[in-house]
Every structure is written in structure tokens, then in C-alpha cells.
Image (cartoon, rainbow, N blue to C red; front, top):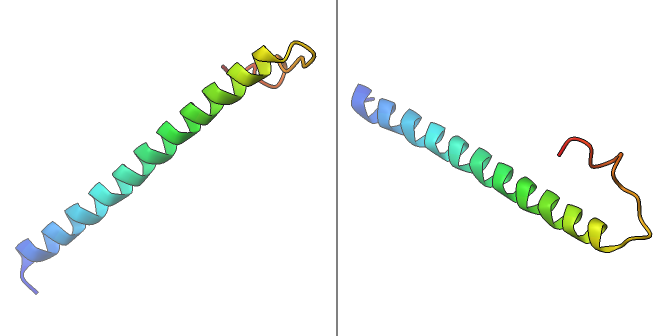
Length: 54
């Protein structure tokens, strides 16, 4: 196999892995923000100890 082609395949694989990791991180941050906003909107819930890592 051509070394340049192999190198390009590896680069594409790493780019895909990085893209997936960034997507997952963004989704988790958005989900956490939504959870926190909804929890704050419900005054009967005291979720501060659960959300302490904010």
C-alpha cells in the first residue's frame, strides 16, 4: 500500500475521532445547561448539590 495513502487514511480516522469527541462534548454541555435551567425554574427542587460541578 502506498505510504501516502496509508497516512491519509490515518489522518481521516483521527479527524473523525476528534469530530466525534467535540460533538459529544458540545451535546453534554448543552444538555447540562438545559438541565440546570429547568431545575432552577422549578423552585421546589433543590438540585444544587447535584449540580455542584458547574
